[in-house]
Length: 327
Ligand code: TRP
Image (cartoon, rainbow, N blue to C red; front, side, top):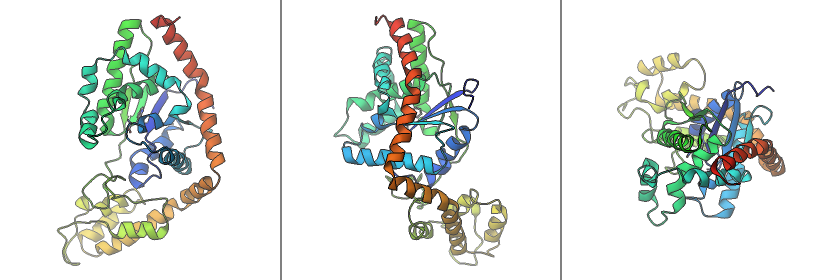
């Protein structure tokens, strides 16, 4: 693999446990694609997760499940670097150094910080405030220039760029300004057809669950709420089941036509979608189960990923310490 000429991309993903359909369509498919063309570094951000998850056993199992999910869905340790944030402790050292160029006011006005203050009012820990500084450190420690993320990360990425500018201003040109690369995938709605698919909302389609579970979840999906009678024409544009068909086969135009002309009904459409999701993810589900049955393999891959990054992190830290007068 010739990584030297490839652009470095970095993305971080929260260890939320087993992934759902929205995670795959919204982010992971893109990660898999980018490993072919880029020097791709993917990080499971357990340090960040500590700002909200305080159960050690839970964090440990979710980290491993996330790793197994990513590997099962196609991240290939020979084509990208997958690792766990806390396995490269230089991230936190750099975060401290970047914190000293970051005005508190920038952090206080971060939208996610304001949201978290509302969502967990009894646990407004300092990590929540400083979260974007650590995120900036994640990215720039490897001098990544592009960051594939969802639109919800726009404010964080802007902050990363501002922090880089502040650092470069004070200490000289050190880091490139990272650029966000937004995934084209539209926001994947959950089974309720209203909110973004998310574990905390409880509207997920669990691609690594049993076929029975996937079927049950798909059959529970809310479709076009104005289509009352089976003979009413359907409106694929507003039907979440129809929208998801786009990702599973190239015949969705035909399927949509069937809906518009009431040739087919919502139940037909759901059965087909469930079949396709189950079939599409069957090989990944097998790989997932196999990895989870051999956790040592997962741990070895993650350890090797962190080890591979050691010299890169060390080189950046040497440079930064020198520039800041730490020797
Ligand atoms: N904040 C990101 C999220 O919640 C995760 C993350 C941490 C990240 N560090 C990153 C994303 C670096 C991109 C780059 O999804």
